[in-house]
Length: 463
Image (cartoon, rainbow, N blue to C red; front, side, top):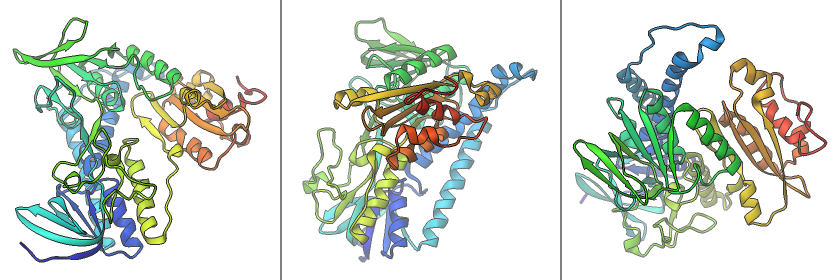
């Protein structure tokens, strides 16, 4: 047992919640350390999630454009091929660049890095195991251990036939047939990657629609686009079991014929990473799904222990974890910290992209909030026509009486970037009239947001 060290704040986990918390704490003058079992900083998002998946999505989309979309621009391309190993090398290089950048930030802010598996011992003490065991003490502890792929009954991830999102980012060959369990963001994004490279992709979803938490009209349009691209769907389908037979997978579905595939990607949600942490052993409170319970200051039921990010549930988004991390640390130091959960954007990085912020029309109906909606389509947008990206729409949900914008939902090329304006509008409690009166450069895709806002008033100019 090595000697003890004392910190103002010990952060457990170096993902988007953990590393951001550590940096902000150091900036505010706290003696800070961050422990993670990985040698590379960045957590799941940077190492095996958000960043590598976007790298592959971009590479495969460029390949798709070269093989499918250039003729309309008068560009003839022949003998187009791809090199999967080079795509993977590029993805890995991007990850390495960002992890090195985080190492620099830790050094710049004098944050002590600790590598190993952390376990809470109570009373501010944490045991770190990395070959040997070290006990450290901290005035405050922040848990930001993130989440992992959740398993479902009858389906177990083995890393070979049944893979998680991590495995889907590391395949060394294109599967003939990839079956995806779950029609959420992860399943649709990774399904798109391998579809573009030639795999047959079938998506099986328990609910009767894709993207079950999103606006129904946007999700319905997305389903039509994905089917047009060649993706196959079995909706309202319950997986009973996945079994390996003769080197392939047999997927049993309740009330339907079994399907077969080379690989099965399980993307049916996320579960909190609490194994070995010692939180529940100390009687820390969790909910029915195992997520840590926190109060409005991100304080857990254990004295001096806080938690942010995926491990506390809610939207499983890197930026949500980062926002919580900053607010939690500022609460500790300054006595106040705030996250506006109604202004947290969410993006599905398929093509077209699907981006949303705030409440959907269906959520407003459930809450009995009177609303009005405005819609604008990209088929008449000049910039969209020039880009040959006319598929998609903008939908704005506003309060019927006050005109305050409650939600914005976009399906379009570059929807994720377009959404930033809507996030700012909701953050500043703007009305649809406010958005409609703001000058938008012409020709740009962003004009569609203005048109949707105008349609809520006296009428869109080009509608």
